[in-house]
Amino acid sequence: MRVYLLVLLVAAAGTYVMVPVVRHVALVSNALTPVRARDVHSTPIPRLGGVAMFVGLLLAVTVASRIPYLSNVIDSSAWAVVLGAGLVCLLGVIDDLWELDWATKLAGQVLASGVMAWQGVQLLTFPIGGLTIGSSRLSLVSTVLVVLVAINAVNWMDGLDGLAAGIVGIGATAFFLYVYVLTRATSPESYTSLAATVVAALIGVCVGFLPYNFNPATIFMGDSGSMQLGLVSAASTIIVTGQIDPGSFEGSRAVPVFLPILLPLVVLLLPVVDMVRLILRRVLAGNSPFHADRMHMHHRLLAAGHSHRRAVLVMYVWAAAASFPVAAMGFLPLWWVLAGTLVGVVAALVATVDMMPGVRSMVARHTGARHVRVVSSRLVSGTGEVSLPASGQAPQGTAAGAEGCTGASVALAHGSQAVQPQMPPQAQQDPQHVGRH
Image 1: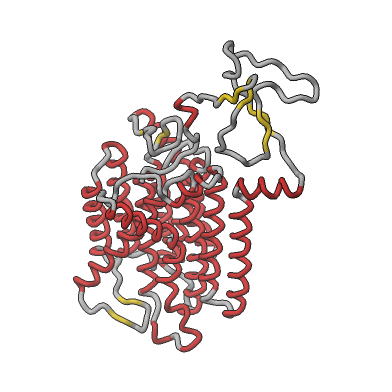
Image 2: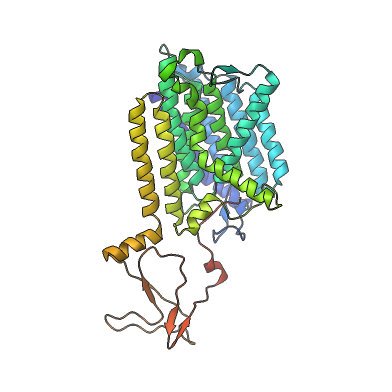
C-alpha cells in the first residue's frame, strides 16, 4: 500500500507543480475559454490543464517502473495507457486551441483508443459467465467502444469547476480499494498490480489538479484533461478484467466477477445517462449529437437554485454513495453493503435537499430562523443616490429576504411604483463556469 501511495503522491506533485507552468503558457498563447452565450463564467479562463495532468501521469508511471516492487508489472500495457493518454491529450490541446468539429474529435478518439488497444490494452474477456472474445478484431472493436463511452462521458461531465476531476477521483479511489483487495485474493504471493498502479496515478492526477480547478477555478482542464481521465479510467477497467479468472468465483462469491464492469458503470452512471439523454434529445430536435446547449444535469442543478459549489458537492456525494458500496461488495458481507448503501443514499438525499435554496427558505420560514440580506440598487432614483437608512429601518431601494433565495427577481419599491433593477449584461450572467457541451 505504501508503494501505491508513493505513486499517487508523485502523480499529485507532478500535476500540482506543472499547473502554474501550463497556465502561464495558456495565457501567453491565448488558450483561453471564451465567454459564450451557453457559458456563465464572466471572464476568459486559461485551459490546457490536461497537459499538466499528463505530466503527472507520465512521472508516476516512470517512477513506478523504477521501483523494484512494481517493475515487474510495468510492462508494455502500462506504456500503452500512457501513449493513449498522450494522444488524447494532444487531440484535446489542438481542440482547445482551434476548436475541432465533433467528427474530427471522434476520429481522433478512435485513433487513440485503437493505438492503445493495439499496444496491448484489450478487452479479451467479459467477466460475466467466463465469456471470451474469440476474435481479435472483435476484441479491438469492443475495446475502442468501451474507451469511447468513457472518454465522452467524462468529457461531457466537465461542466462545472472541479466536477470531472472530483467525481473521477472519488470513483477511482473506490476502484483502487476494490482492485487492491482483489489482488490480495487472487495473487497472495505478490500484491503488485498494474491496474492498481494506474488507478493510484489517476487518483494522484485528480488530487493535484483540484486545488487549481475547484470553484473559483484559475484553470480548466479542457478537452485535453477530460478525455484523458476517461481513457485512463477505461484502461484500468480493461486491465482488471484480464486479472480475474471467472471460474475461481462461484455462488455468492461470484460478485467480484461483475465488479470490473459494474463499478465504473456506476461511477459514470449519471454522466452516461445524461449523455444518452442529451444525444436523443438533440437528434430528435434535428441537431447534431454534439450540439451545445444548457440542458446538462449540472445546468439543471444550477437552474434549481444551487450555487456553483453546492451543485458540485451534491454530485460528489452521489458519486461516493454509488461507488463505495459497489466496491465494498467485493469483500464485505452483502447485508453490510446494503446497510451502508442505505445510509449513503439517505445522506445524499439529505445533502441534496438541504443544499436547495428553496427548501432552506421554506425551513427558515417554518422555524423562524431568517437570515436577512440587504440588496441595494443604484437605480432607485434618477440621480442614482441611495440615502442612508434611519436606525432600525431598511434602506430605500433594498429588499430583505431569507438566505438562499438566489436567482429571484426583486422589485425595489420607490415611491408608489415597483422598479425592476436593470443589470448590466455581464452582471446578468451567473459568475460561475459551466462546460461547453
